[in-house]
Length: 98
Image (cartoon, rainbow, N blue to C red):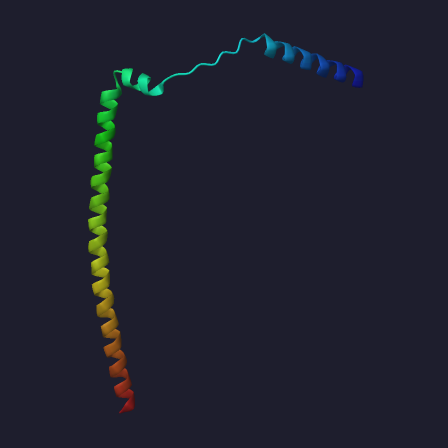
């Protein structure tokens, strides 16, 4: 049984080595920039990409304005809350002293 397994493994190794050496491997080089420039769809794809980028930029600007407004409102609320808390603490201290 062990001999058969070893024999099959050696046969598989020899066959795989033979098939690798039999292949005709070829490597090439392509100028991807030249290929992209030659594609007729490039102009429409570039226009779509620019439009998409502009939409994203507009959305970012809108979100930034919204964030700034909410942050200012938070600061105002926080300042009012602090001053109210201070006044409440003063009233509470003065009522306890009396």
